[in-house]
Image 1 (tube, rainbow, N blue to C red):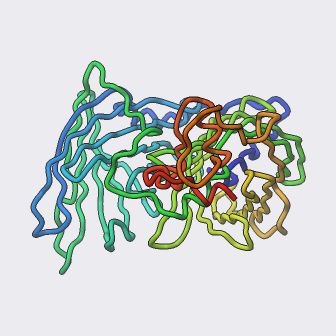
Image 2 (cartoon, rainbow, N blue to C red):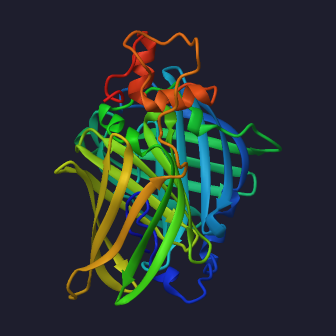
Length: 390
């Protein structure tokens, strides 16, 4: 499953049909159907073999999205240390014929190095990496039934001894208020300053450009909305593109342990990918390796933007032993013909530091507060964000 991995690097071979049609979701996805619905539950979490387990409670809502190709599970967890929010996407990788699950949340993007398979009636996933300030190697067993789902995440501790890191059971209920992850702000993790560098991406955009897949070229256009999620700990984008009826969701989070941005992409064409990126020469560059119609491929994508927002993006792809091709290029402009800047309402009392920056002025004109992490921090001190003011 392959998708060009950044902001709107979206259109792949499936889009190049003369009359693009959404492919049928894989039949294997029905194995995740028990996750659709509303749930409430509880469990425990321990940080080490000797650690005292901590109690938690949770609510969750699962639904099919993007033409039925994915099941999206939103979970809000209440702990003594604060709230945690997670969004998980479940799908089936047709290229590798295996289940896939990836998550984003207040603790960052998880599942980047995950390998999953079904054993009996359970989904078993293994993962190793660095999270919450420590190295870890873990196995998660998710069991789904008509009554709900349960899970056990078991970690390898010192000396090769295993312990139950997280244990929980979620029961199906008639109705649970849906978690509003876009507005979540009270949580354990804090936004990284690196996310503030992406603030100019927030807004409504129109892109025009072209794609080139194996020598076939096509003009494309799309509408894209980019907003903050998890109180500024992630960016979320939704795209509706032409030709056809292309839809995609994407997310970006920063990993301070590696210094890399992680980008997750999913679409109604069944595309699913994770890429890694960093700033180079003032531009945001992402790289990804994947399978494209049974052939190994790699893509390098570049996003160019300034204080006023997106300007253009492009990507080069190598498939098999073939030479690189310019597989995507596009230019962007805000959906509104006017500038992002909106004059503050007359008589408004502004924080110390002068006129509001464009993002805060627009939010004020709409009767709400700016959600950029840097602006939220400045407002808490009675000041104007100096990053967005320049």
